Structure formats: structure tokens, C-alpha cells
Image 1 (tube, rainbow, N blue to C red):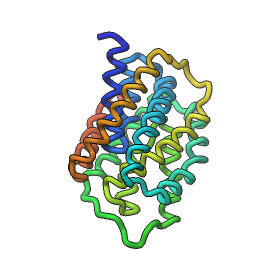
Image 2 (image 1 turned 180 degrees about the horizontal axis):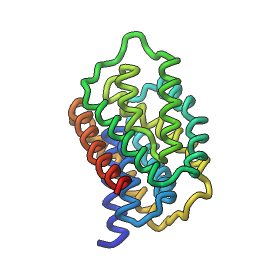
Image 3 (image 1 turned 90 degrees about the vertical axis):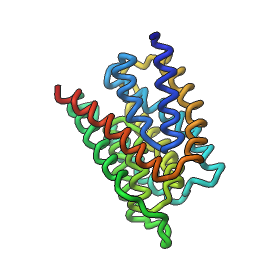
Image 4 (image 1 turned 45 degrees about the horizontal axis):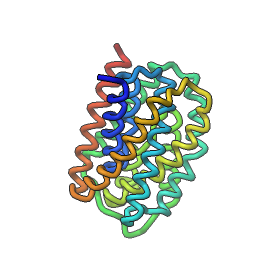
Length: 246
């Protein structure tokens, strides 16, 4: 199979994941770039952030149009994550690649296990600024350190910590992904050789896939989305864990 076809296929799958689930795109993008498209780890994480930023911005527009974005909560998460994302993005350059892969797999597995727990609906008390800011800072740090958008942690945090409904958490997480990914990219400027002939079609297919993912989210129950999201994360975490330890 040609590199272009692989890039288009992987991009479409990742776009659907981001559009439907509000996360998981980076978790899938990094291994796809590493193992299918032969990127180096540094280039893969940077390229992943570019792809996920573009795709998340598209999906965010679609979810916002339907009123599924909690802007105040998302703004707190995003603002709190900017500095940590930038700082850990700089620090990640000095960490061995195997250690980053191991940390990536552990964080993804923990997020998946949390998503398998029953989620509650939105809270009547509204946004709790301290908890939202603390969770946002942690998500930003993970984004910068591991080179991922952070949606696979943002969704369970928005559901479990702040009590948003699943669909609202999905839409709001996309705002967090865009801001955190841009901050992480700023820290990674000049790191790795970027192959734009692959990144561009990959990102284009992901953007188109995000629209299909958003339509899928409107037809499937929140609990089903949550379980699918969790099992995808567990599978990716297991694969990355084996790769880090072998």
C-alpha cells in the first residue's frame, strides 16, 4: 500500500475519532505516523499536533454550531493549560524516547479505565473555577510532554470532575485541544524533520473525517461513545506499552 493511501486512511480514522469522541485522535495519530508512515518519534509527535490542531478546529466549529460547547469551562481549561503545555513541551526534548512512549501508554490506559466508569450528568452548581483550572493545567502539561492533543484526558475530566454531559464534554474538549496543541507546537518549533507531503493529505483526510464523526456522535448514545473511546484507548495503550518495553 502506498504511503499516500496509508496517510489518507489513517487521517480519515483519526478525524472520525476526534469528531465523534472529542479525543483519541492524537493517541491514534502518533503510532500511525511512527509505525505506518516511518516518522521519527520527534517528527511524529510534532506532526500529530499539527494534524490534530487542524482537525479539532474543524470539529469544534461543528459542535459549537449545535450548542455543544461549554465556553466558560473550556476557556478555563485552555487558559490554565497554556504555560504547562509550553514548559513540558520544552522539557520533553531531554527525555529518552522509550520513557516518553511508556508514559504515553500509562496515561492512555488510566484515561481509558476512567472512561469505563459510569459518568454522571451535568452539575447544577455550574463551573468550579479552581477545579477546572487545576485539571486544565494538568492536561496542558500532558499535551506538551507527550505531544498529544489531550482530548483523551479532557473528556473524562470534563465529565467526571465538572459533570458535563458526554456530548457537551466532547465539544468542549475540542476547544482545549486546539489551544493546548498550539502552545505545545510553539515549544516544539524546529524539532524534527516535517514531511509535509504526508502531513498535508493526512490532515485533509482527518478534517473530512471529523464531519462524519460529528454526525456519528448525533446518532449514538453518550454511554456507547464513552465505551468505544475507552476500548480504543486500552488497545493503543497496550500496543505502545509492549513497544516501549521490548
